[in-house]
Image 1 (cartoon, rainbow, N blue to C red):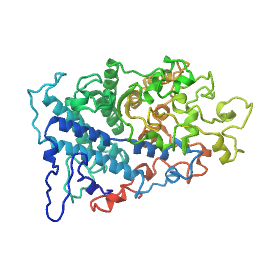
Image 2: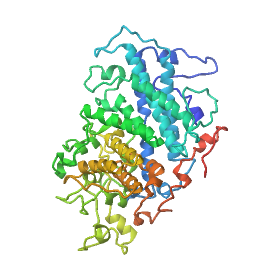
Image 3: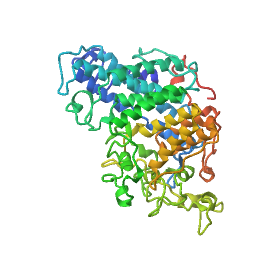
Image 4: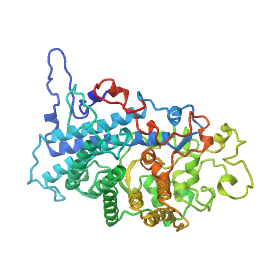
Length: 555
């Protein structure tokens, strides 16, 4: 069902079963809300379903296509060509997927919160870990509220024209399960932010932090994924708040919570993964089941790494790498999208082919690009060294079809896992983002040297040959540009670039940066930062049925 006013009254199919006929509206054995929510364990089961509806896949896909992360692959037969050419359709595609997806999450969180009101937890009942039923009850409510906050925040990011203006038009604030035919207008950003902040405060105060080895991980609060970072914790709320305030331009609070997230993670043994921790051996590095490289293990879901919160995706769930491939994440897997040349070039700091044996440089070029890729030489224009052979990727005499056939940069940031060739967990909050938020805050305060030191620390840990030069920024614009550049590399294909350009592009004097050859088959190569398409349209499925809904400018 594709209308939000109808979607919001859907009942969770796994918990409710209703039918009606002309003779008996309420059938024997029908599950009502009162029958569904009887115990705290019932709440926990429903919470697992709420987690299942939390997703950032549409955001990852939309961001990669609309910015400068992707190029049409050598197996592309027209897939996503319109969106990559900045044709944004309010009646279908990612605007609709994001709108419905996030309101589906919010609706399920609200149904859990309403069902929880029917239950009175027993304060005398204590589990094996020493938590009372009241504490577990409040923890479940806290997680539901945090997920509701996450849904609202995602909607504001894409559908508000100005995230930094509390008076700007936001989205529909949904703090309850609405009536069937209720038409709700858009609220201001400030009104939605107030609910988000309230939900996050409750979550931080009440969520029980449990580790993967706790005796009751699978029983009361969590599903049995065996990974504590697949569930919201107090520190993931710190990370959420850091991003929230960075996006709002409140860098005092953004830095406060980023500092807290980093300090707490360090106390729990979660630190940035060093590129030099394990020598590079291709056969080992690229193994999806046995790699020993700490950074690669995180992307293959073999270890927590730097993850503060990720969404578990297993067999039967959505698959993130299907954004790029038909079958597998390599040259023979049907790459209908591959890495943009402009992004690839940023990761090759030493102007060497990063896939060559013994090459030096950024570990991310190994982790994000599959070794089966076809990589044309950088050439003299980019590397600054004399040409010895060709063709080069930037050779103007190379026709487009040959260029695409010979320069296939296969994306491998999501390498798959056992039994799921195209699937990996969706990384929502990572430690590196917290460092970037610290750097943003320092630039906003005029501490350019402090920001440079943070960016260097990221580059040092990512480069397998060791420490990198300390950046020196002539002014704030140069500092913003370098922060934005490093975010582009580190956070590619995680759903950040579109929002980053929207909020930081003007400060950095930077916009969508595509290699000209990648643009040849498209309707356009870039759009201005002031273009209306840096805000998504409200989907037609909403505007058609909701007379109070105001469409965004330009659509």
